[in-house]
Length: 157
Image 1 (spheres, helix red, strand yellow):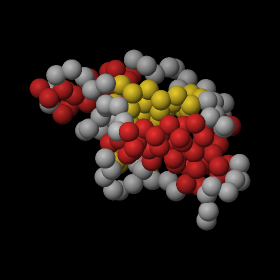
Image 2 (cartoon, rainbow, N blue to C red; image 1 turned 120 degrees about the vertical axis):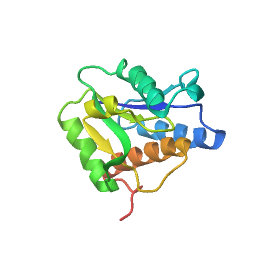
Image 3 (cartoon, helix red, strand yellow; image 1 turned 45 degrees about the vertical axis):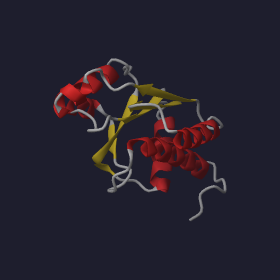
Image 4 (cartoon, helix red, strand yellow; image 1 turned 90 degrees about the vertical axis):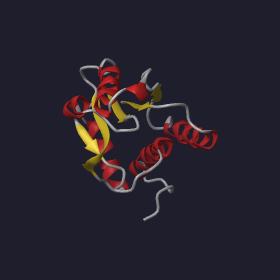
């Protein structure tokens, strides 16, 4: 199974980029991993919130393959603890999912068109995080889940 992280937005700040790169590198021990950063559409400032979300969704929907398992990061999604995330990832691997795609929307989140085709909606927290930190938190939590699955020492509970 390949893990894909897709995000709408600009490149990471240096401090975030270092952390994302570190956890992505660590994750490679368990699964192939790929990050794709999609730019904010041109003229975004002139669009309504819904128009912008739709344009971003259209870009992402064009990249989704038939057999992808789509996890939309959404403030109204289900919250999981780290152990439940590990079980969730293991279940997808057991189902022989080819690509597990985690999608981080733009500044206003994900459009209903994308949410409606998602296999799972996940909320990292009830807290609001800076957009770029979500990438770091996501990479770290998926790495933590993998260490839990392998019964390694990274996760302490």
